[in-house]
Length: 234
Image (cartoon, rainbow, N blue to C red; front, side, top):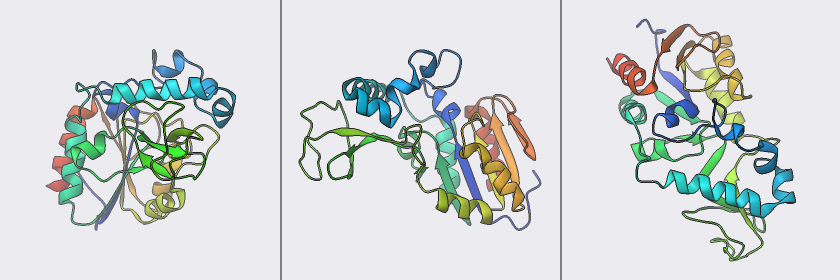
């Protein structure tokens, strides 16, 4: 593989496709979660204000699925963790996913859409780790209030985390890699163009091509990502 020279800085974006190969249900694919429930009913601030019980039950179910012992990091997660450990330059791993599979694999990932294994207190605003169900009686670990614990995820209509940090990394990176993302949800869908506009080489790893990239690896992430990582480390 011909990389830009020098190649010091990498930004990697992962989407639902990488987690789907660990058995997690995706949102946008055929038969995905949004084909079974309206996002307006469970994934907006308005839905939370309208029916907290329904929203809480939806995310309790998502959290329970994540805790299933069968859901484990796959070879793509593990390969990215190895790359992060061994890459001599800068590497920012950004994920659109709210699961913790990157962390379980050993990576440090920046969750631009928040995390399913955390809750946010509507009383004090603190984000806290959370495993298991949230109930109306659940107390905030930070302030002990029972005013309500919402999922610590970014809903439609809310601003993703750390866009300034991500934009800065995209403007400085030599290589941008998108893995398992649909390329339809902004602002993440614009990351490749932003990196390319600053001179970065871009690679897409996906089951099918979605946009303009310098190189495309088509196939399951569990097969293509380990191969790509081996090339990069070579």
